[in-house]
Image 1: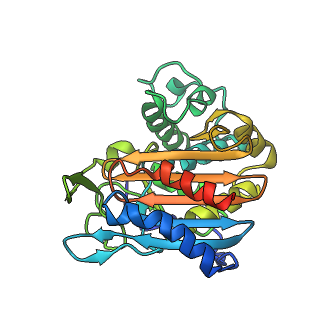
Image 2: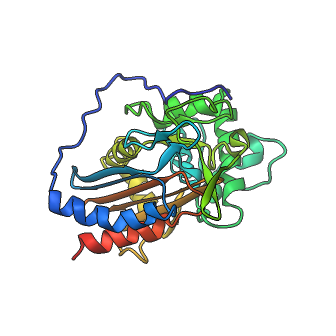
Image 3: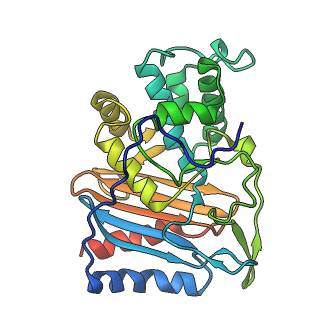
Length: 303
């Protein structure tokens, strides 16, 4: 797979940032929840909170590169681990909508060594199930075979053909010198040590990277029925699990959420359809409590 410096788009649309609704008191209250995690080296990364298109909180903590002394910033790019499945699912569904493949096709029709399992069944696996990563890596191979193109190119044209996400891409293992992408770390006592991962082996399941603003834009486009049709989006969000996401508990029946993990990275994304609440936590510290931190932010916002 060739390196993708950012997922290019067919239509050069300007990315207009959501309107800011800065409330210093609210920002201070949310920062006070996050700061202890950052001070204790339990969290390093970027957090964005928005509601109905208005950004309420947009802050970064810790270091993107400890050795080089580069801090994390709101614009820093983070590997999102298994959150990559959301992009793969939309790419596959777009191919289905444009009749490049069918959801009742079986994997062996595209990848001869693959099992006889339908594309729909692969998409529907819960993201934290034991076979989820293997299934989504297979979906990437199916998409590449269906289009006779590298999967990164399929992502560009199928999943991102009408949106602008300049800080998002797939890592094929050649981006170690890319200073805009945070390096991943693991805790060793009170110190941080670099983590390593074979990103090229995780294509389709965990090789994507993005920024908090790009992810917010992605969610806006998805729920605005720009990435897939309204019928497809409703089918995806009605399922209790699958397509790279979970729905409902413990965040409410109208919550659509996912937790992501990869060596050196931990992430969490939530969109609540009732009030448009979005919480995005992208971290470059292995096993950071991204979901627990997001839960604390959500509880504070709901008071």
